[in-house]
Length: 443
Image 1 (cartoon, rainbow, N blue to C red):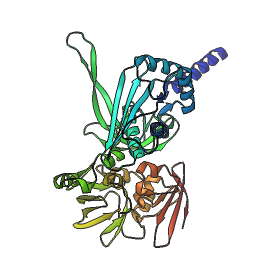
Image 2 (cartoon, rainbow, N blue to C red):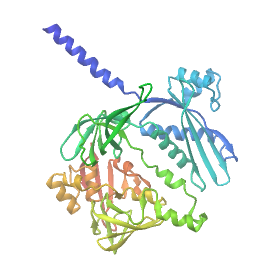
Image 3 (cartoon, one colour):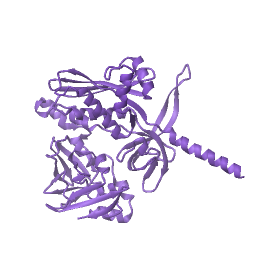
Image 4 (tube, rainbow, N blue to C red):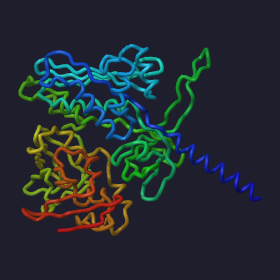
């Protein structure tokens, strides 16, 4: 009996460690980018672009990126150029030595006001290009912003996939994708299940498997190996449950919204009209829900979000009536309001995505305990509330961490452990978080 028990424990130990070892980040190496076109002010711009890209990829936590010094050392030993490894034999040799699966090469070009960054993702096993991405700007966009957009596009080529491992109360679910795999607060996942197999009529080869959409969830808290989120939607007739598959949805690139359009003053009138009619994911005349509470006085609100002003609560339905670079207008209960962010210097989608959503947050709000719903309704901040409950209660803070939030994404705000709200001309409210819960509220 003792021997049998030891055998079972041994099997369980190896099973657990095997499951842990199943997840391995894709190892990639980023080469210096080749410089094309007009001369840049900095001669090492190809190396700098590669460094920016490496930083952006590492911050996402999705890849195991080869350390820069090791890469240069191996290239010297193999007598390969830092930016000239393009033939399949060289790629295969480099990948084998580094243990990398993917090598990223690319170019950066400047021609008058036009800047363009190209990247190719090469499979080291056969030297084939598995993805090619390009971003460009016809304005004076900072090159680093283009590189950040490039990183977002590269990440979207490697979606996270996993399973629903638990459906809890209050419309919550747990998935088997955690911090180790690159999950972050605010990331969305499509939930689906597999249907019938699509086979070739002659060979019988399975060409594809039908994917049945079930719904969508958004991550609210992340642990090492799991993440907990809320259900944003469920398809009619379907229910998200244990065993369903999940796949990370492609996040909209905030940099794309900023860099893909020419400066407003250089656009023809008809292009200006079209731009204002549909800026990124927000369109004039369409209905949206307030994702976070905003505060307004005399029908005007701002990104600073002074909490001593009257509140328009999360979950309220509004209609966008106008979009400009520095402000937006919307109607609520028959009155028109102006939302101003003239100090933000960022385009509409970046700002509005922190305040507006197409998904009704009502079901999520309804699932909270009665005391929390009371706090949210009265705009209170209490110890024990989560970050999202604070967003529903008071809205976005003016400072998160040590940064003003005008150019921060919602995900960046949710990752900060300290928030500051303005609740008067001179009064401030300080909120401290630990493990996604408020631990200190200080005036």
